[in-house]
Image (cartoon, rainbow, N blue to C red; front, side, top):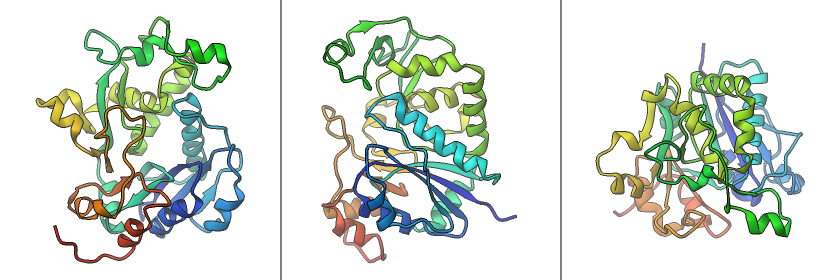
Length: 296
């Protein structure tokens, strides 16, 4: 039986950029599921990249807030939509609508066909080794814009749920069906645990990461801070699972936008996707639409 792969995409703007990503993923073994933030008009996305065989837009959409649990729920909706088809996918890969495919699609499929859980774990959030305890140890009101909640966000301490150790890492992952099964089973058995993360800062960087790290599949995680000796170099590495993401500005809440000046570095990178790109990145997007020699 030929393997099939599910790509899950979270998008909220820049329909043409999303369309470029979807075009790069057009392959008979790939099914793409897209969630467009309910705050955005779906029409321009459908105009830029109409539904087709292998491309489905979720019709029940959520309003997604940066750093909020709504992003996790939207991701779970994508997982559920893929699983509801009855396909036993070989891989579930989570992507942003601002991603760029920088590797030949056959190389991507080969990577997805292995056993590695392409996920990156960077920080301990709970226990004696916690480096960023405030992420879970304080209440963050990311989806409540009332003035009082905005003032209190990140200031109110709370008891940390100790069901499993909590970790933080990159949002963007590519997981095996076994890992997805572990996540869905855990959430079904611990509904209060997920509700706890309503007030976690960037729950999208915590929920899936913590569950997989606490599972029997933890030793298959591609990048885990507990397995490195030079932590500073590890944290500076732009490789996040299969993504190249430049977080060189530690003060920024967003990764650096990529331009044509990054092309040579991206082609040398072991990453297969890069983020983020935008409407100012067309030279770079076009460069990866057709391979061409690059001077290092």
